[in-house]
Every structure is written in structure tokens, then in C-alpha cells.
Image 1 (spheres, rainbow, N blue to C red):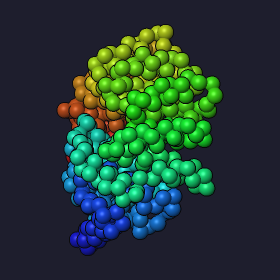
Image 2: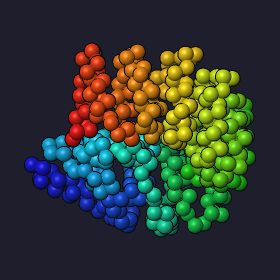
Image 3: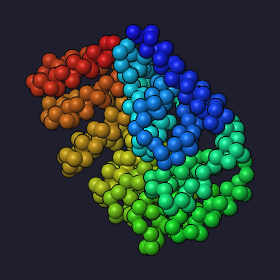
Length: 407
């Protein structure tokens, strides 16, 4: 049965390659760069006609599954649509669920970002997901020359908002690699000149923001004439800057997280800060998290920054906050979730000392921290927890974690 199913997956995987070649004359392979390219091709192919089609999900799911196998090891599980034994912790991945989310929800759940998460969870470290920039330039310029750059689709007011959003996102993804920068800038300027298009222009900029348009983005974020939904996209537009360009406007970015009072926009600002990779930024985040003058909502936004950066330098700060009696339980819940994502090892003992006082949710969170950590004695620690645990559900979860390590 396993052999037959594997052959089916291989056939569907090759069928996806055939569709890409026939429709776009683009060659795909089972590598991470092809996944990035496939996201663009999927959007262009369906152009607002995405459905829950089992055929589409099967094609993309098989492609994702075979790519997961090649990138991180593992094999198709018999009698299921999953890939088992992926990464150091031998997790199970359901590529059909990933493709279903991508096809039904669009760019809010991109294949590349989902696979990036799978990779990090499997290996508990930022694995090498380096894209082949030369290949992206070659493919996207070819699509552009063949008339596939979908900027005109953004203006189609008869299209649903989610379709125009997705087309704007893809415009930015491709624009980053296009050779004719003058033409691209001209088209971007035209978008900004149309008040109805500013929202979509900000979506475009999330993947390709030229410094020429930075002042306009700042104006949108700080202005009173724009809705919060537009401001949210404008904050995200700053994600399109290079790390060096973000460092040039660091004071402006830091100011956002304190000036903004809308909780959602504040989280967007925290997300932005988390994309700035520098020792000074890590130090600044730690200082503000420990500063008693920083309100809890701002600290929650900074936890988002920590979750994105995932640096061990945050471990000491988060543990200090976790054991602070003045910190609310809801904030401590978020700390547990964040620690789950960090490269933590011997610090686990400090949390273990407080395990018996945890509620069920935080016990599960701690077990996950142990499971995905670099801690060498995780199996022995889990067995110790099992011997002292009275809750049957938590016991079952611990046993499952032990089995996961043993398999």
C-alpha cells in the first residue's frame, strides 16, 4: 500500500511540475526556491478562482510533501497524507493541510512561510532556507516579459478585496527581482497617486519598498486621514526595507511601539522590530522588557519581536519576567509560548522548580519547551514529571512527548 501511495504522490508531484511548465514555461524542482516560486504561480494560475478543489490541493500537497522529504528527510506515512520522521525530532507534517490553507486563505498563509516554520520546529534552530536569488531573478523576469506581472489586477474593482490583496502581494514579491527598476518605480508612484489604491500600494511595499517611497509611508503611519487597516499595511510595508535601511530609521521604528495606542497596530510594530537583526536591537528589546516604565501591552508587542528573532540572549530576560510576582498570569502565559520558540537548554531547570504551581495550560507549554529544546536530558526530565503528575490528561501528553523522543 505504501509503495502504491508513494507512486501516486510522485505522479501528482510531477503533474504539478507539468502545470507550471505548460502554463508558465517555468521549471520547478523539489527545493525551497521552487516553493517560493510556486506561491507566485499558484496565485497567478487561480487569480481569484481559488477553490477547495481536491485536485488542486492534491497537486500542491504532493509537491510540498516531496519537497519536505528532500529538504528535511522523512518519508510518506503509509495510509495517510502525512510525512513522518521529519527533522531531528521526527515530527509529522501534513502537506495537504498546508496546501489547503494556502489555496483557501491565500498569501496570509504562504507555503514558504509555513515550510519555514516546519523546518524550525523540526530542528529547533534557524535552518538554512537560503533562496537561490539568481534563479528567482531569472524566473520572475521571464514571467514579467511574458506579461504575467499582475499590477493591472490590483485596479479591478469588481475583484473581491482578498484577490486584489493577493495580486498586490505578488506584485511586490516579483518586483524585488525585476531588472527594470525605473518602470517598477513609475508603477508604484501611480498606485500612491490614487487614494483608493494606497492600501494595496502598502501591501506591494511589504515585499519591495524603495527608499524613494519611505516618506510617504511615514506620513501614512502618522497621519490622521488614514484608517487603521491602511496604517497596519503601512507598518508592514517597512518590512520591505533591507536590514541596513531599517537601521537608518531605527528611532522612528522604536517610536512607533510607544506612540501607537491601538493594540493591534502595536503588535504590528513589535513584529517589525523583530525583523531587525542586530546586537543593539536585541539589547534594546531586553532593556525595554525589563523596564518597569514599559506598560504590559508594549511588552506583549516586544514578545512578538522576541518570537521572530528567536535569540538565546532573550532567555535570561524572559525567565526574570516569568518569576516576577508583579507580572500578570496572562503575560506569563505568553512568556511560556515564547520560550517554546527559543534555543533554551539548562535554563529549563529554573522553570522546572515552579512546575507544580502551573495550571494545565502552562504545564503543556513547559512540556513543549522541553520537547523542542536543546536540553540533553529531556527524556529523563519528562519521566520525572510523569512520576509526579496527577492529572491524567497531562500524563498522557508527557507519555506522547516521551514517545516522540524515543521514535
